[in-house]
Image 1: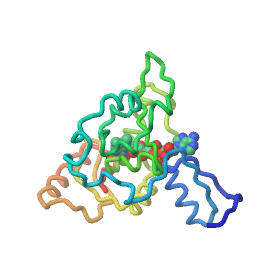
Image 2: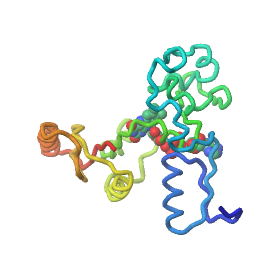
Image 3: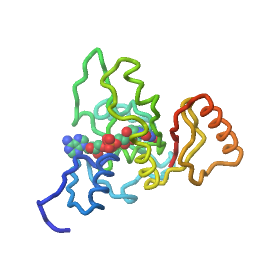
Image 4: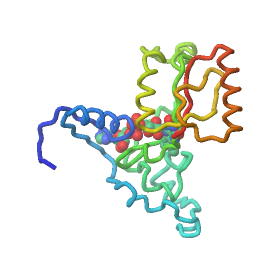
Length: 212
Ligand SMILES: Cc1cc2nc3c(=O)[nH]c(=O)nc-3n(C[C@H](O)[C@H](O)[C@H](O)COP(=O)(O)OP(=O)(O)OC[C@H]3O[C@@H](n4cnc5c(N)ncnc54)[C@H](O)[C@@H]3O)c2cc1C
């Protein structure tokens, strides 16, 4: 690796957002610097708890209440927080943030290279127009300057790269899109197809719900 300090772009944070931006920029020929505040994490070799049976974990994976209360008082409330993922979460004592007393907010954060992409549940949802308009209808914040039509092709672009597979999780406002090699049973597919048709006939907007 060359020791250049001459970069075309600097990306702050190596999560899904920053990581993808860095990938795209690099592939377009730019020299990119990614800055990440979290600990280094080597793919595979640093997943030290992967496939570890419960009985091989400290206290059989029962919560270490003292440690969690001291260092992970926010993160410990997240689904998926336990000994198996402990190394991947933000240390709340070292990285505190201010919360308004009347508006508490649990900020679940990764503390490693890759950010929360290391922790996420692999469900990939497309937002529909119903979602983009929800806060305006409810009177919160600013209206999104974009709608589903603006993102549709980009959803497809990303889904191809991350290898999404469409599944039959259909909301009332969604129909399946971008179907490529679903991995579900025939029965599930039939159900999915019926639910999808019903939803679309009911006036749903085109949106996909996918799993990797
Ligand atoms: C347990 C869990 C399960 C989830 N499951 C799903 C799911 O199934 N489907 C789904 O769509 N979403 C899911 N999510 C949410 C999803 O993971 C996040 O929305 C997504 O990963 C956020 O990506 P990001 O790049 O915006 O932020 P992050 O992944 O948080 O990346 C931000 C990065 O920036 C770094 N950083 C922050 N400040 C600085 C700084 N000043 N300098 C340098 N670096 C900095 C951080 O360390 C971090 O690595 C889940 C989240 C969690 C925690």
